[in-house]
Length: 460
Length: 151
Image (tube, rainbow over the protein chains, first blue to last red):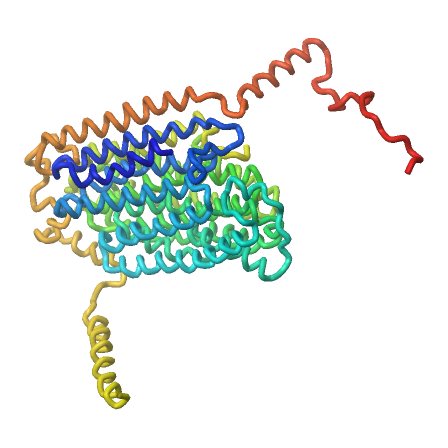
């Protein structure tokens, strides 16, 4: 754990002490080295699950894929931001990368936390750099309302979580995940206990987001600069999923009845947000709503609490993180050239940028869960486990798969195919940096096809 | 005291309200910022202000440096070395060396061993004509049950 945390903290001196012209080079290489070291976490040294490096920081097969994803994403964020931050003065560029690095530190400590209160503190701490990135570096005036929605939706969910955790501490005497998994199942029969159950989960359901409380996500994703969108889509949403998976361990047996409304909301959300995607004119908004759709499936898988549900959720979280981040990067390349997110303004790009059309194509295929990519594996496992829970869910999940394919195809055809309008003909060509960025997103997804057991979690 | 406050409050509220009103009256940001930005890009007259926001001025960086890789706008040396290091650390180190490390990770939980062992046992038992698995996990003769009728 420390072999990754210390280099991550040393990123701060790197950012502030290197000469300005080598800033991006050194931070990119430093964060790629951290990403390499983070792969060492994949060697699970213990058969019991938890590989503890102390009593407060540990990794287990659930947190490890998310930790590696977090560490992999920082260099990608730096690569993606390099162009649009370039005109700013050097100290502001350093501040931007500092915010990304501090997000990284908080996320590593959140996923590695064994004490649930520490996880909660890091969960809240990630809000601050994200809020600053959205409201300071977003491009439109709506960024202020986006930041407000983001902050207050998440806070409104997490204050009940704090109360619930303190109550849990009172009744069990400990909040260490290592210990609490062995605690006696609690007698949970009163209405107060039901509210406590909801309090434990609402914060994570808002973060995921669940369909009814998802309004913050399109605003935050759209108004954030590319690095903000990437980290939001790829990792911060997964904090919600991870938190839910940790909390559900101790919430039985109340969960059997109480999950009904949330699973229905999640499934309905898949259909609704997928349908909204078909009507979007704003490219980033389309990708944001597609994130809500995929996360609805993940939420369904987690709430079911079966081994396949959990495994499918983790696989889909990792795969979606990489693919969604890639789509945001592609949308940003179009935005940096046309200064617009409107889809009809950046269309017919295949004739202008043929190699990028290949990246768009593969990213959209991955988004619609093409076999053998892990997106499909995760979706299939969740759909199967939902079918096992109730055969009627196949109507919603099947329709959701169909709509996902429809809007992914719509996104591809709208941006790449058809005649290119005249203003698009003079757009500057693609940079090596941007091609590298897409490759670094896609290669891990393809490599995960060959070794999926890295993502199966501890239930399989 | 109250009379003083009652004199101050109307001015205060008017100030706040008017500034709020003022901002509401003045703001003409179109509902969809994307369409607002679209208007700018639709016009071919790209004003320097709009261009400068992404740092290109009116000149494409490819004019000064035909080998521009997208990393550093002004210095081609830094741009090239940034590209080389990003590719080296990103692909050669992280993906290739990291991927090799991950490929050769030990068989966690002996799952692959279990699959190979099961296939081996099945092949062996089919060759010997034995059933693939016995019905009883324990040998029934080793189980000692209390005799019925006692209490």
